[in-house]
Amino acid sequence: MEDHRERADKAFHVWMMISSDRHSFRWDHILRTGESVEWSARRVLSNFKRAGEGDRILCYQTGIREKGLVGIAEVVHPMIEGIRNMEIRGLHRFPQTISYQWFRKLPEYRQTQAARLRHRGTMFSLTGPFIRRVRERLKEMGDLEGAQLLEGAADEG
View (spheres, rainbow, N blue to C red):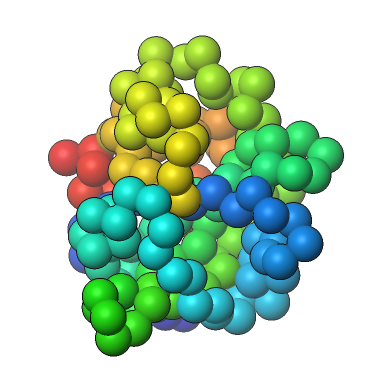
């Protein structure tokens, strides 16, 4: 937990990553343990190349109960094409899922790359207005730690 607090003064970007295969990978494991996992680039390769150390990831889960955002991870090691996959580490599990049904029609979400590409890919850039809405939702849910982890995003600049 200390690592992300030390980086709080540095600007970071926020991405959305989608895990759709519930059998091979579940966000729950890294969000519960704080461990890291390598993630190979699939679609939208340019986003994997742009993600930097300390960037935050909103973890989007499909294939179980309800689709939605389940927590926050961070980039531990950025991807170096042909040399190393990106490595991400779980930071925080939300007390409850932020349902896709809640945010899918928000104008702030409709402006994101994830909405424009209809989730066809693995990792998407997000906009400042959408990040703010997620942070507000976390505060409404009483998840101040989750909201704080999204404070200072460069995307909100």
